[in-house]
Amino acid sequence: MTRQQGPASPTAGQGRGGSVRRAGWPVPAGLLALSLIPLTAGALRLVQLAGGPEIFPADGRFAGFPAALVVHILGAAVYVLVGVVQFLPRFRRRHLTWHRRSGRVLAVAGLLVAGSALWLTLFYAPQPGTGDLLFVLRLVFVSAMVASLVLGVTAARRRDLAAHRAWMIRAYAIGLAAGTQAFTDGIGGAVFGTGVLRGDLAKGAGWVINLAVAEWAIRRGTPSGGRRRPRQQPASHETEPQGAPA
View 1 (tube, one colour):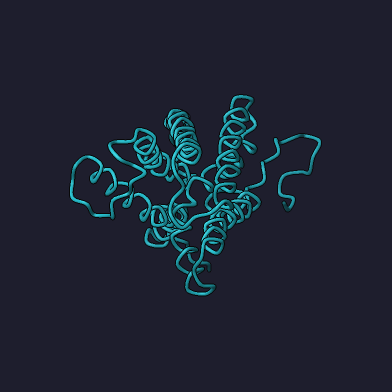
View 2 (cartoon, one colour):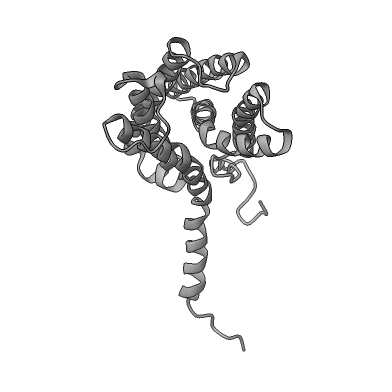
C-alpha cells in the first residue's frame, strides 16, 4: 500500500524560489559597491564646485564651474545606476518596456560620459602625477566605449539581442573602470611603488580587468553569470514519441 503524497512543502518551494530570486542580485550588488567610490567622490566634488566646503584639495584645472566636469559626474551617476538594473535578468524580462526606455537613457548617458571624458582629456591640463601613457589610454578606451554603445544600439535596432547585450556589457565595463582603478592604484602603488609610469599602468589595468571580466560574463551566457538556457524546439509529429527521454 503506497502512501499518498501531499502537496509540496511551501517552505521548500519558497526556498527554491527565494534562491532563484536572489541569484540575480550578487552581480548588480557588486557593481553598485564598485561604483560607490567614484560616485561619492563625484558628488563631493560637485558640492565643492557649488560653493560648499573644500573636502578635496583645490584643483586649479577646474576653476569656476566647468561644464564638462559637471556633465561627466552627473552622466556617470545616471549611467552606473540605471545600468546596474539592466543586470537583473528576471526584472528585465518582466519589464520589457522599462528596459527599452531605460536603455535609451543609458545610451545617452554613456555617450555624455564618454564625450565629456574626451573633452576633459583633450582640453584640460593633465592630472598631476599622470603621463603621456594615460593620455593615450584614455583616448583609446573612450573611443572604445563610444564604439561599443553605437554598436550595441545598432544591434538592438536590428533585433540582434546577443550582439546588443555583448556590446552594452563592454561599454558598461569601460565606464565602470574608475571604481576598479581605485583598487589598482592602491595595490599597484603598494606592490610596485609610485611613479608616473607605474601610476599610468595601474590605471590602465583597471580598464583591462573590467573588459576581461566582461568578456568572461559574455561567454558564460548572461550578464549575471548564469548559463544561457537552450531554446526549446517546437513539437513535431515526426520526432520522438511522447515519453522518450530528452
